[in-house]
Image 1 (cartoon, rainbow, N blue to C red):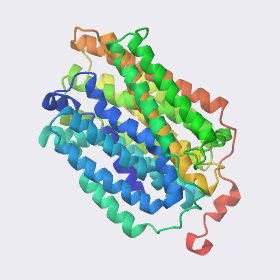
Image 2: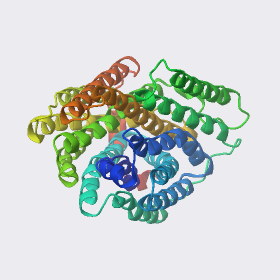
Image 3: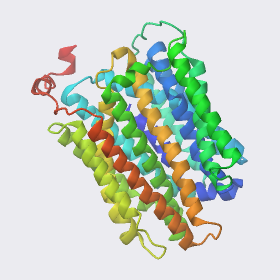
Image 4: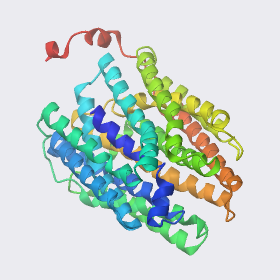
Length: 465
C-alpha cells in the first residue's frame, strides 16, 4: 500500500517542473497550462467517493488492481500526446484510475491496523511514503525533463504501476466484499464531478472574465446548482448513496476533511509557485530545480517519522495544530521571496520549516478521518479524505493561481512574476492558519494510544489471528 501511495503522490507533483517544457512543446496558454494539474486533480477528487464505494461493494483488491491498470495505460497515453487536449485527457484518465486505487489502498491499511501503536506506525510509514512521493516527484520530474524530455515525466509512472500491480496481486489477500444493499449512486458521482469542474473552471477564467461578469456568474451558478443537486440526490436516491451524509455528524470525519481540504489547497499551490519561481525568476534549470526540492522531501519524511514518535505520547489533534502552525510559518517566510534572491536565502529555510510541519500533519489527519467509522464504510471514508485533498488542491491552485496571475499583470518580467508568486505563497499561509483553527474548534480532545492498546501491540498479529 505504501508503494501504491508513493506512485499516486508522485504523480501529483512530478509534472510541476516539466510544465514550462510541456507548454513550449505542445503550445499551452499560460492559464491553460494549469489544466495539466486540474484535469488530474478534478477527476481524482470528483470520483474518489465513487471509488471508495466501489471498493466497499466489490472488494478492495479487485478495485485496486483495476485502478492500477488504468493508471498505467493513461500514463503511457500521456507520454505520446501530440497536442494539449490529448495530454489533458490522459491526465484526466490518470485521475480516474487513481480515484479507484487510492481509497481501496487506504481502506486496506485502515482495516489491517485498526488501533494502537501498530496503527500509528503503519500510518507513519504510509504518510512518509506519501510525502516522499510528492516531494521526490519534483526531483524526478526535473531530472527527467532536462535529460530525457518532458514525455518521460508521464512514462515514469508506467513501470511503477506495473510493479505496484504485481505486488498487489501477490501480497494482498482477497477479502470478501461488503453486503451489496443496492447499486452505487453513479448519478451522484457525475453531479459532484461536473459541479467541481465548473467551479474550478469559473475561478480559473477570472483573468479573462471579472467576478461580476455574466460569464463568471453563470458558470459559478451552474456549479452551485449541480452541487446542490448532488446533495439532494444523496438524500433521496433509492440506490446506495455515494456518501451517507450522516457520516459528517462524526466530528473526527468532518474536522479532518475540512483540515485536509485547506492543507491540500495550500500545498498544491506552493509546489506550483515554488517550481516556477526557481525556474522563471531565478533562472534555475529543471534538473537543478528538482535537486533543490530535496530538502523539502527530506523534511517531510523527517516530520512524518517525528509524528510516529510523538504519536505514542501526543493526541493527533495536537500534532495537527503544531504541524499546521509550522507549515504556515514556512509559507509566510516563502512569501518574502525576491526577484534577486537565491536558493539559500529565499528557499532553503522556509522549505525546511514548512516540510517538517507538513510531515507532522500527514499521518494524524488520515488516522483521525477514520476514527469511529464502521468497517463497511472505511472505503467511503478513505475516498472522502482523498477527495477533500484533491478538490482542495484544485480549488487552491485555481484561486491562488488566478490571484497570482492578476498580481503579475500583462508585463511579464522576473519582478512581476515574483510579486505574483509571493502573494500566492503568503495566501497559502492564511489557508493553513484556517486549518489550525478547524483543528482547535472542531476536533475533540483525545489522548494518545491507550496503554492497553500499546501493550496489545506487542502481541504479534499472527497470535491475535
